[in-house]
Image (tube, rainbow, N blue to C red; front, side):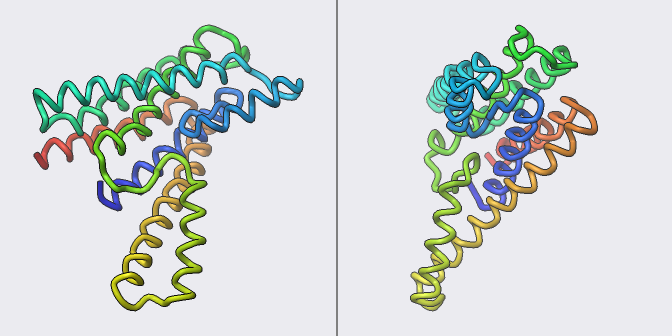
Length: 224
């Protein structure tokens, strides 16, 4: 997975995570750990939609498991299609997220069946994206959660100040820093774009990441 692909995927993660947060009562679709915090808030009586947040965990796991089963099957029988299939799977789940979101609109009841299904599908889609890097066994950056990337940026900056950019080590650290900053920038841009797009066109905004994923799938398929 190259740097540009990491950045694009980070943009998608930021876009979908923010859109889901705004549309579905603070649900994190890509950064599923954040739902622990929201469940804690609900227990204290200052949150809303605890069932939606609880469903995020099994649905996230289901997305990962589905990715693994499909990838391993294709890896044995149609290896050239395995990588592009993960993009298509995520695109299909996000399309379902879009459709159920539109059917649920206007969203006023956090426990409504269509709202719960919408949240499950969005979280499953981002579970697929979280699984992709590990299934492909690539050394790309984390593109759905930025906490580790922020940590790495600080460590790399200090390392460069301490040892400089000369030599193989300095060039390696410098290259990693640029890639990490690009992924973080992509996530931030995606987050802002997702928020603005949802305010303007509601769940129709999900069509953009779906189109990008279809393009990435086509690009992967063409490269094989």
